[in-house]
Figure 1 (tube, rainbow, N blue to C red):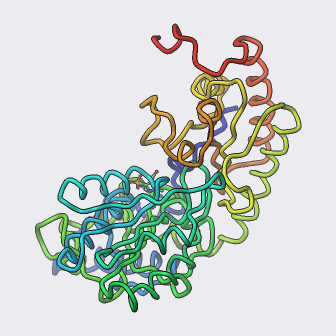
Figure 2 (figure 1 turned 180 degrees about the horizontal axis):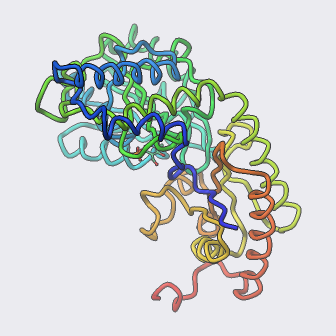
Length: 399
Ligand code: PLP
């Protein structure tokens, strides 16, 4: 049976989401900017979806900007704030374990003359408040700290960081803004903006059973952003381009389902993720969980198998119908060791032997039980074939 456990890379579109999108491809084809009735119906679908997206995170609809996905949301937040407030300072704080959408944006700003501090994490994968405080300067205009990590599921202390930002705005730099990449966290844990002190927050539809290629940036009222995409006055002049009405309608539906079913879905994913971990741990020796097990999203498990090469395990599991990942979808295939696990201080051997399982609300107990059995057998098989060694065999590296 094919078992898809790579839901942090992307999820299947929910049938209700597909139904919500369908009319906007065909009979409701209007451009949301058009004055005629077709256009007005498209516009009202966009505004309805905006309310539903806002509802998932406790924002007001006017604070939601539709963009092409999590990557663009991160780019717009970071580059948008950095350029808009450059006159007040050119220093940015982020963490070493962010998604490439954040890290590459920061490094691109470094080449424009911005200075970036990359906060370290400990073995648990968590940023420490003291390190945030110590990194603050009177030139810091932005802190970007992910809500939950895409490789380990580890949740960062966002409310604590938000409180530090509010204090620093009074004492260090009044033009300091706080962005969080909540692409993995949204729909998995309750996000309530009123408790967070966050100014900008990124989300993406395809991680929560919505379509690919649509996402949103929450921008707190009063936060200025330099534009990245120039053209018409769409999205309150923040993001030009004809609205992707079917995708936006589907995104709204996905957020509505995620909000209504959050507790039930999270509890079920948590139960199945724990079953997967304990089932494998009961059958396989020398296996560890990466990141603080108590501080994780309910649907992600990053496990390290001693004496096993993660890429080989991934391929062997794929042949048996179990889809997993060795890191984020964006960096897999690069053969670079995971920057997240490396930053957490795992040894090369541990990083090399790690794979990520990620569940969705569609994952069933039968699938998990099949995965437990298949993973256990495959790990044992690989260990019998390749004796324990700390470095890959030179011939294997060349192949
Ligand atoms: N941020 C995080 C934490 C992610 O996991 C991802 C996708 O894997 C992204 C950003 C990028 O989102 P998108 O695929 O919608 O561009």
